[in-house]
Image (cartoon, rainbow, N blue to C red; front, side, top):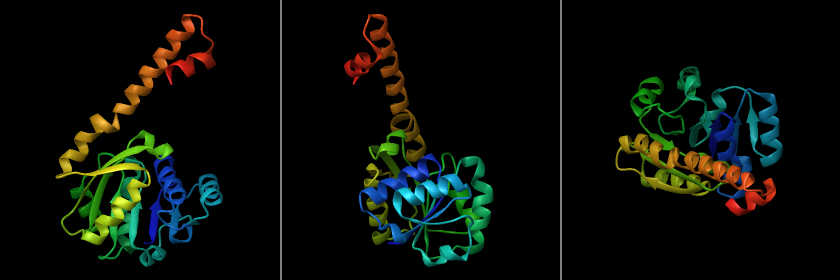
Length: 203
């Protein structure tokens, strides 16, 4: 399995790190495309993956293309990908709110997967729900499970709507828990505990 990750931000970087740590994909089989030099160099040093700054014909030698750019950057990224992507390649998106219909129109691609990872993915303890188009075969579905099991746990949805619905549960849920823990910590401090002890109590 050879993988391209487009975008080395928080989520793209977290997925990359989790894959290498779990030995799900060998670093020499991962290409990170990231224009920001600091992010690119940092992730390359940490994981040993290959890197480059721009989307070009190089991605044609890979099996999977994972798009991990912010939703507002999706249009230019997909316009560039559409120039080089091949019909047999599997495209996986972790972009929030970008539908498969939108991706199909922009990329002209039928093998598509939408994934909704959540915040704990940043520490390889995430929960990812995904939906794959009918054109994605059994072997490719196995690849998806391998990738996102390395990031925590994963669940296949019966339809695309479930991916959006999951945002309110596994996507946003950890944020509420973090907020609750933060408030409990502050309450403990008001009761006279030091910040360090308050954190221990809440954890």
